[in-house]
Length: 273
Image (cartoon, rainbow, N blue to C red):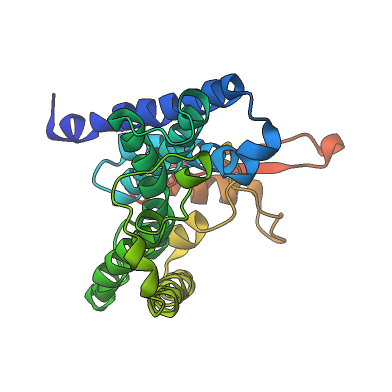
């Protein structure tokens, strides 16, 4: 197995973990008998959907471009999101209020701890690196420590307080520290750090599009869930010319019959080779 093959081995493993977590979330949620509204209000449904979607998006990128961190960040985010959904659903099914058994307390801790890392670390880093897997320049590396610090603080607000996700089921997770609630100043700090990180990600995307070449701009176009880029017909650009341009970018093009509206579909790689 070559170097590239070795690097991409964890991709299907992480995808399988995320898929397994989604399956557990669904099965345990149904078996718990808690009802759709309860699971939806406690984010088990949305976390499972988001986690599965991130994993589905990350697997092909990590497999085809293992040196591009975007695929791995998507997979990590999927595992974290789906893991929280699975943990909460399992708690709803197998634990009881006031349960102090170590196994259930560990599950409760994972339910509280996992999902914040996806939204506060993985997602903004994906946006900062999209689509090349690299920062716009070295000057943008300051976002790494700020993002990590924001993720740590954001996760702390979901782990240490007594009022947490697992607490609604009456299970006391590990790491709960009631005195943490006196640090009220952390709220504005986390909000400011989060706004800074996501604001930087938005600016990065805009600058990358403005400064990017044709390939970069095409990769930043709207992508449907089946990996097909959709764009309105460009006046004055013949189909043969479009085929040549698409082939130069490693993609393909297909044109529908005129009676169906002459729809043109262009398929391009999701990442830069």
